[in-house]
Picture 1: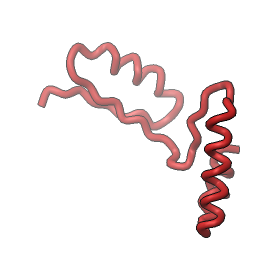
Picture 2: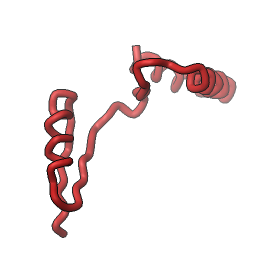
Picture 3: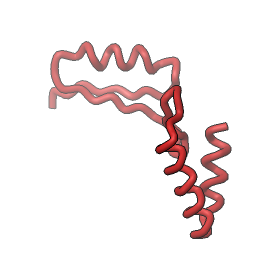
Picture 4: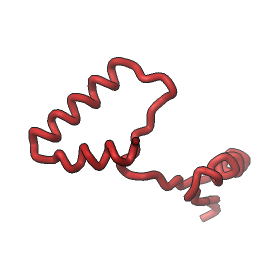
Length: 77
């Protein structure tokens, strides 16, 4: 199909993978494997997202999905 593609599996490969992806002259696809429960957060935490996360956790616990909240905490600490 003429589409360049690559997969990044570790953090060590990320920078080189992005560099190769951006250097492609045509369409390109870069697949980056991440942990499904890992939070992607900027260096500074703002109030809005923190409140949203607290609401998500409270709703999950009330719906009987406390295990998901614990898994998310374990993955990110």
